[in-house]
Image 1 (tube, protein in one colour):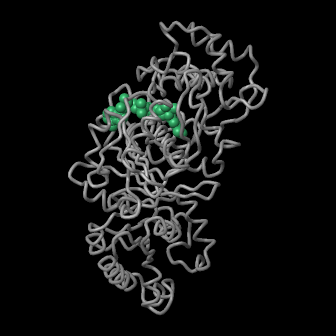
Image 2 (cartoon, rainbow, N blue to C red):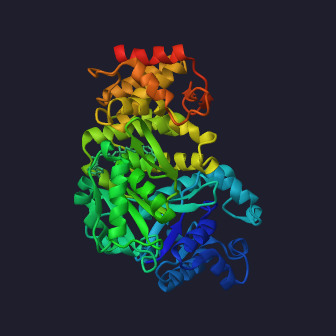
Image 3 (cartoon, rainbow, N blue to C red):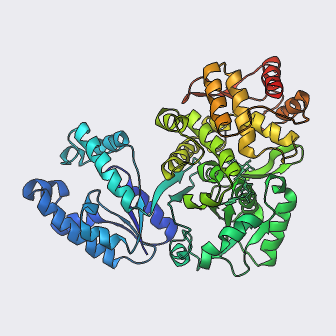
Length: 501
Ligand SMILES: NC(=O)c1ccc[n+]([C@@H]2O[C@H](COP(=O)([O-])OP(=O)(O)OC[C@H]3O[C@@H](n4cnc5c(N)ncnc54)[C@H](O)[C@@H]3O)[C@@H](O)[C@H]2O)c1
């Protein structure tokens, strides 16, 4: 099985194919280059001299030959229009077809800036270009086994994110082993999961499963601890994991954070592949490399930045997720939409219920990856992702990590952040959205006093030196403001309101 990249012109297929091939250890091949070699001149010239029909016939022949000839773990970048051919579409079935998506205006700028940009026959007028993009996108989405996001970070690490329904489907274990992003003959996978997810999904990893079987922790936030980490480290030693091997984190954010932390620290660091199975993890926690465990006194206090080697997401695993977990995960979708604004906010705001489609998972992941790419270590823009989290984490801590799910606590934190932002209308809207999904909008019936929450906020790890805890505020969707100072009295009032309302 080869990895075949499809997508519109200007999506970056050639660049990403080269990077993916380096990760997979196979060759990077490009159909347009091969076609031009075969023709002896440029595609633009062929288009002009012989017309589109003749060009498509030559393209079909070259692409079909290429797809018949590629080896396992090779990466192929296909010309944007090559999938118009039925023979090409048939040949794709043998491979893993990955859609590299791109916004039409970004694609337009890239194409115009490329050396042959002015000559490209299908890129002469933006409106026609955008219309063609919309038309092709439908076809690409239908053909693709998964969407590929190429995650980059300022430290220079880069990794593939594959998001596709059915990637973990029962009966397709063999295929998953074939498309596994790390070379298993050199690096053995060691699976870490919680008991619930392990029972449901460990077998789906088939051949990827280490001989020793999954290392399991108990499910839930109260087990995201150093004690669980010690259990995992000990099991990795017992089962013979070496520095050449890698960890696979199969589960929600708790497993991802814990297994990522164990990977970051085991023998000073081994790679980790995330296979997230909750909404929180698929839209947020699996990306960006923050790993860690909680202390009784403070959440995520012990940890490390450790970027994944790859992330594999099957949205169909959400079908087994209990409704309350789905709702809690939806709060991270809401948070991401508030930060992103625009079309994502419109879609999330006007949605009913907590079910999200694959497109929304992809958009949330892409939003987070773009922010992390600009600021991996939380020194600037990345702090926006903490919207609602300062108070949310404090609530989780003072209630012993058992009363509220992470997403539920973040929902309450969002209400405080919007009160502090003076965004009354937006706060009311968010409150309605939470309430409509049976999510808490107040600390009902919980014996917790405001002082405890304020003390936990004060211990927040975003606090630097003796300064106050910087807050993320947001007056309008799409316009988060980081590093905001909030007075003690304003904070007390906003938290108190949550307790009494
Ligand atoms: N690292 C980051 O950037 C980041 C970002 C956001 C959240 N987080 C962390 O994520 C954690 C919360 O993650 P979570 O909400 O996924 O919790 P979780 O991992 O505890 O999962 C919730 C529950 O769902 C079960 N479960 C998981 N997948 C399932 C499936 N497909 N079907 C049935 N049951 C399933 C689990 O066993 C668990 O009981 C918190 O610790 C939070 O701090 C980290």
